[in-house]
Image 1 (cartoon, rainbow, N blue to C red):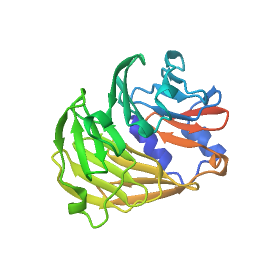
Image 2 (image 1 turned 45 degrees about the horizontal axis):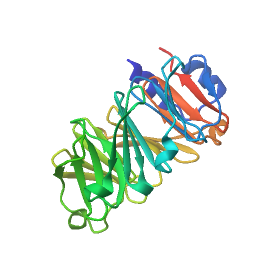
Image 3 (image 1 turned 90 degrees about the vertical axis):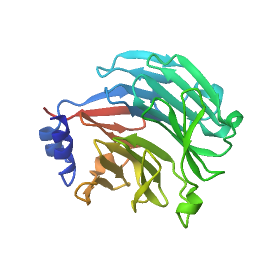
Image 4 (image 1 turned 180 degrees about the vertical axis):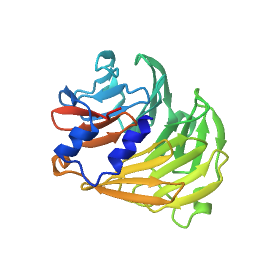
Length: 269
């Protein structure tokens, strides 16, 4: 299984050249200056240029689509591609959500302020093709339809917690909701709003949930947490990766964003 190669990588204490030769196939890369990127579960790559262009490449590196209106809505805060058929762009400064289709054509634009949502820090796609928002003003996690209608909302977090979390990331996966607050950790809920647990993993960069494993990194360490065994493993990142702007791991590849390129290391099959 592909995930085995991911776990093999994470079982390594560091990434040296010799280890890379044994773990990875031929390195690929995309040249250019990019401010950010992300990858969906079909290995499509989404690249942001300094000019504000969003470009989508397929798994072979071929250009699929381009969206040139990113700057029209201000500075982008987050992108969610957990559903490859629907891309969510969130512009926090203006409370705007732009919904794109798989060809990066604009499907919908939602002004959260018109929906009575004035302090939304994080959004994420939901299991029912809508999306989640965390309303900091009311301290509630809310589920909206694709059209922006309120479908459900959870209990006020100020009642649930002594110190209200302020999540930057929301991940909906396998009937769990993961809210990541880099200052307070990971808050796990079910779809019905029941709080399950808090994991004290603070200060993680590039937080992600893949096949129910939690991943993140610091400048020098890579983290992997298994909720089934409650085991947190930490691995040193090779010095050659210290200048990485972002690192993302998928079951197929390791992606490293550098100043002038995106490097792609495929796991050997």
